[in-house]
Length: 411
Ligand code: HEL
Image (cartoon, rainbow, N blue to C red):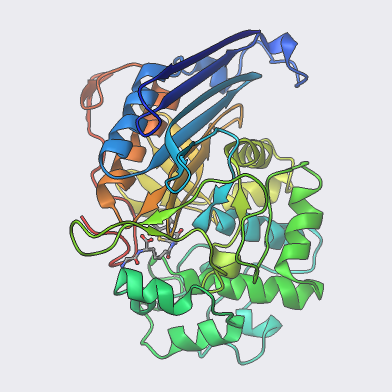
């Protein structure tokens, strides 16, 4: 195993780049078949990856890191600080809040229940949760693909970023209270008619999980995903406010230019729960999405259903709790993004699940950082190349804006 650690600069500007270039046989993982999709991908661009992380840092993220798992080879990069108060450098093993990456966990639980014949994806939500929703035509599939039309209650909640956050930081909501907030607004579309991203959908997913299993979502995540995959950094602590063990602090960017960052690490995340309250690490998220795409968490039939894409924009589709992103080199990757106060994350894997990237920036409400971090996917899956211009005769460009609910990030 070759291990290279490069450190330059002072504590604040510290750069840590760890490259573990291990031959596949030095790591106790499944042997790599000769011809696999990930094997056909270009080599990751580690210099480009580090440049992306440094750019995010310059744009206001106290820390940023990325981990690539590629058929037994692990590549790690981290810049900046885990904790501005102590000056501790961000470590690639630090845990963090994953935001809406939680949605894939919730979808997996429901698809496992569908596999077991306990849930019909095309049944109305109201069949399982009588009278919850004002329209019997809204199905479980609509909810998991953001086509229910249920208004996203977080639009109002976080219209003002810091006051909105402080108002809910220690609050504990029931799922039904969150659904009630959504139903104070008209629905955004007819059931099934359009994609409209809404946290409300995955609050409904949490209610379904609890109703169908008789257990909390935390118990179901644990028994169906965390324990089977041995995800040692993954937790659902709701309504606890602390991240267990060594973790990165997350810093919310205030709406007012120049105002100091807010340490948002400690919160219940009760406003999100099954839509966004999981804690994890880059290693665990790579393991999770790799296992999912390799068919280890659901039947092949249900995975195919997760991959029925609703168009989001020119370069993205949404399946069932799963995003597809089409990169500038023509490669598509599968996973989710997360935005929770203090943390932006990207976790995606190749079609065959053999190359995975998770990247984190320890700030939020900063659209520049969010867009910059998209570059980690390009570096991980497209390798060293021009980021815009011609690729194989076709004009490509890296999109400028994320698929986000109104007002989620300032630009
Ligand atoms: S937003 C997203 C991302 N998702 C959605 C969900 C998640 N996160 C939220 O709904 C967070 C809302 C408040 C975030 C807060 C901030 O930036 O810290 N913003 C404000 O307060 C703005 N006024 C679609 C980006 C996803 O990728 O799925 O995670």
